[in-house]
Length: 315
Ligand SMILES: NC(=O)C1=CN([C@@H]2O[C@H](COP(=O)(O)OP(=O)(O)OC[C@H]3O[C@@H](n4cnc5c(N)ncnc54)[C@H](OP(=O)(O)O)[C@@H]3O)[C@@H](O)[C@H]2O)C=CC1
Ligand SMILES: CC(=O)N[C@@H](CCC(=O)OP(=O)(O)O)C(=O)O
Image (cartoon, protein in one colour):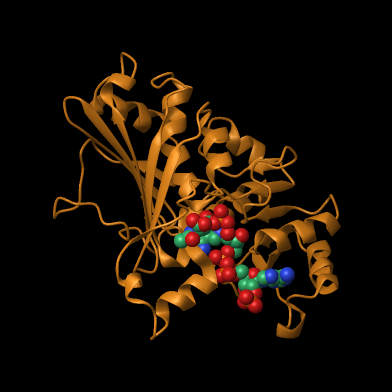
């Protein structure tokens, strides 16, 4: 059987390892690897990029920019970092947005969406696109994430035996209100206002729960009820395999929503809650799944013409 040659640059990091784990049992994939002493060597990495049918960059932003400046234009690349998400020459890898699947399929350069941004955009883009919500509405968003979202350094900090007591509690961060996902959150929702975004990291490994509260008065007719917004979202994602819209007001059996419920999975679940005057939209998924490695593999599948969900955990 013909095999695709795939190179993961940053293969021993949190995102890269998960891509390796997902692809290592795929018969039509051959993973190109580097020896430990070569994994930060530019020359060796560029040779693998030239040899590969597709390369994943699972690197800090600066290292991603450095290698892209040297890589041949013909190389197919999926970058999981923040470096190129709003760059004009790159396609944004959220396949479920209108028209995006086709753009990804024919692209040489795809930027995999940020984890928090994936949740926010999945909830808000359909509302603005279908004119249920005005593009200039001032949005707020909260996002809970497991500590694996911070990669190897944050995992080491959380798993240290002598860690500070503050790590036992959820912690708000990016209090300068300048989170690096804000540009993509605004661009790919079509919002004209920068959202007020408050991420929270807590003492569990992986899983993400992104919430957006809205007054029903902000929603245009004929969508001005929780049920109608749920219907709009269900219709928007009716062909999406990796985004599932739950029935209106569906919660876990204990009446709550746990942020780690989809850990280990590569799909995303949307819930809509409402009362007479207010709406709460939530997206939950694994920050390492649909928030990173799962989305990266979904993009690879589309770029190579494979089945969109091959190698992914989504049942
Ligand atoms: N974790 C998550 O939930 C998500 C992460 N991302 C993004 O994915 C990218 C990777 O993140 P993540 O896997 O979490 O990070 P990690 O810190 O876990 O892994 C990054 C890897 O890159 C390696 N590396 C650093 N510099 C270089 C270099 N110059 N050349 C080659 N390798 C290098 C590191 O090496 P060493 O092992 O020696 O440190 C490490 O193995 C980041 O841009 C991140 O923002 C995106 C979405 C979600
Ligand atoms: C807990 C934590 O620190 N999480 C990271 C998000 C990880 C991510 O999505 O990063 P990329 O934008 O590089 O893809 C953060 O909020 O900055």
